[in-house]
Length: 336
Length: 273
Image (cartoon, rainbow over all chains, first blue to last red):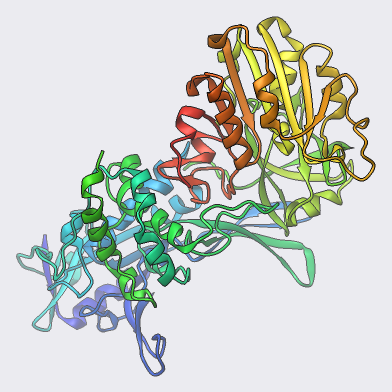
C-alpha cells in the first residue's frame, strides 16, 4: 500500500510512532566531520523528517543503532549477576537497501552461527523495524549493483522525498499509523540499477595462491591498521568482551562487549605472546577474503554489500572495490 | 527467546596444585560433563574473561591448569581454595575418543599443550584394554617447566612415556622429571623417528602444543608415512565468546570455537591464518 505525506503529516506520523519507538536516521552531525568545521552524516534519533539526510551517504552505518559500539551485558556485585535491561521501546531505523542486506548478513552470524542465537543481538533485533530510503541515484563509491545488494523487499516501509512530499510504500503498517496519517497513492520504491563503478567478484579463488600474491605486501605498506574500514562497515560484527569496575567499589561493575577489528593490533593476541597475522597486509587479506569468499562459503552470500563506506573512510585511500577487481584479474590463472 | 549464554556460573575452587613456578592446576566444583579437549570461558568479574582448556574432570569437578601470563590468569593466581571462579561452557569439539579404540595411540604434547590431552590419557589409562598400545611424547623448555610430574610417572607404569626438555637449567638436573619416564634433552620432533610403529595403519596421533611445534611434529609423523587423516591437533586462539559470534578465532570460513579447537589434521593443514 502506498502513501503520500506532506512534511507536516510525516512529522505527525513520527510523533505518533515515537510513543512506542525510537526512530533513528542518518542526520547531519554538525562539526563532527573529519576536518575542522565540517559536518558528518551519521545516525541519531530524529523527531522530524527534515532531519533526515537523503542526498548523502551516511559515513557510519546503521548497525550502531541495534548493535551498539559498547553493549552492556550484565552488572556484577557481591550478590551475583544481573542482566542489563533493554529499552522498552521498539526501534525504527531509516537505512538504504544495501544496509538492509547488511542487516541480513549480521543476522547470519549473530542469529544463525553457532549453537544458538546471540541473546543480546536477538533482543534488540526483534524490536527493529526497517524503513528503506530510496536511492535516487548512486553515490560515488557505491558498487551495490555488482554485489546484487541494490534492492530489497525486506522492509516495513520505504520512503523518498520527491517534489517536497514524502512517498512511502508500506508493507507492514506499524500500528496502522502510516494509513492514519498518509494519503493513499500508488508508490513503489526506487532502487539504483547502475553504479558509477562496477566490481567483478572473482569466484573459486585458491587461498594459498591469494595469500602468496604480492599485492598484500603493497597494501600492507599503505595500510596503517587503523580499523576505520571495519568500523564504518555495515556487515562487520566482531567484538571483544570487556569488564569494568566502579572506582568507588571495585566489587561492582559491568561486563560489556565492544566492537573489535581484525585490522587492529591485538585482535588475535593471546596471553603468553602468540598472535597471528602480525602484518597489515595479512590482515587486509584476511578481511578481503572474509568479505568476498569465507562468508559466502559458510552462509551462501557475500558479506560485502558494496556500500563503499570503507573506501570513503580509509585515510590511506585504499579501495576495497579496486582490490577486489585487481585480485580477480591477478588470480585469473590460479582458480580452483 | 534463547537462553542468555553470557552469564557465567560460580564454581568453588576445591584445591589448587602447583605444577611449575607459573602453572597451577585448579580443581573446581562443577557439574558439567565435558568431552576431553573442550574449553571453558573462565572469568573474574572486573578483570575479564579468557578461554582455558579443561585438563581433567570427574564426578562433580573439573580441573584446569592455568599459567599466570595475563590479566585474568594473574588474578586467578591469587585465589586460594574456597574462593570462586566464574565459568561458562564447555565449548568446542573435543577429541573423538572412539576413533582411537583398538588403535596404537601416539600423543605428542608440547608445554601447556599437555593440559588439553591429559584427560584423554587418563581416560585410556583407566581403560588400557581399549588401546593396542600408547606412546606419550612430551616436550618442555626446561626441567622446571615439566607439568603433571606425578601423572607422567603414573602413566609410565602402563604406557611408554618420553619427556624431553629443550635445555637444562643451571642445575643441569633431569632428576626433577618423573623417574620412570625416558628422559633426554632436545626437541620433541627428535623423538618421533624412534617411536616403534609395528603397524602403520593402526596408528592414531594427537599433537598439541605451540603452532610451530605442531607444524613440525606433524611433518615428522607424515615422514613416518602416516596419513594426515590419522592425526589430530588442537588449536589455541583468542576466543572471546566461545559461541561463534565474536570473530576472534575465525580462520578462513572456520570458527575454531565451533569446529575446533580439536581438528583432524587433514582439515587443520588447510587453514591459513
